[in-house]
Length: 319
Image 1 (spheres, rainbow, N blue to C red):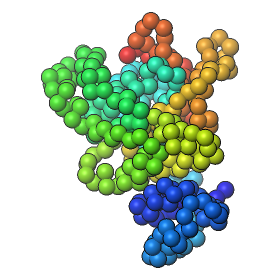
Image 2 (image 1 turned 180 degrees about the vertical axis):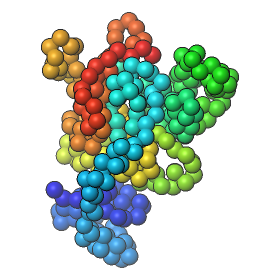
Image 3 (image 1 turned 135 degrees about the horizontal axis):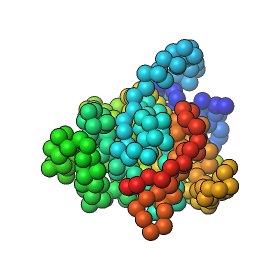
Image 4 (image 1 turned 90 degrees about the vertical axis):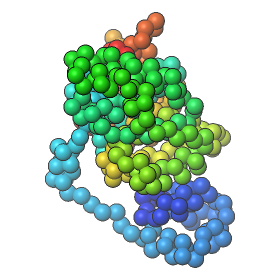
């Protein structure tokens, strides 16, 4: 398999320029024509940098080191006990990607808002005491919805009244002030934003969570009639998100759209939604969670479809 452009040690602006003009993998440099000729697209210093970097070999890590990293992994509580239990009793892991998918109205956006707020809580309440980044590609973020979620989060923790009441009085100003929302409309804008994450991390110190809602829509908008390009863009986004998660030790939660439903392995369970993007994220996500809204209630069913850490399971989550 040809190496991804985003896996090369190139400056962020050069990565964004190449991807924007259709160069997603090293193999694309040999395809003609793609867009403009590289000699016309890049400056001479950029061409030299690209030529040297594309020849570099990826580094290897020992199995023992990978085991130690897994044991030292940090988590934060979702503040939803049933969902925490589904995720091994610890919550959302840092340093890797968690995918959430479901049909429209299944509760993905509501869950994303809750996670952003949960990460804002101090460590003694199960949070990270960190800032959250919410990347909105479909206009899903609602200040009113976030304020309601903050209020609900504060009211659900009577067992920690000493700490949570102080937060409750400043929920709108304190909790929401640490959620930084970026609105993007197309795949190249999303790619440019992610490639500039180093700068975002310097400007917004203490980021603990990155939420992307959704990853599917901008790629569809940009490559509606080109499935191959859309899949290639998904692969690039998956790689760079995994790099961001690992390098900055942040939790990355992404929402992908679902289409029809498929029978679960257990015939007694309801039909599970199918990710519209296929299995592109399955190869780089630590956990894949399918959501289904229960009719006439605020509850939803969460199914851990795949995980590198825990067995598949299902639970009902009370919002």
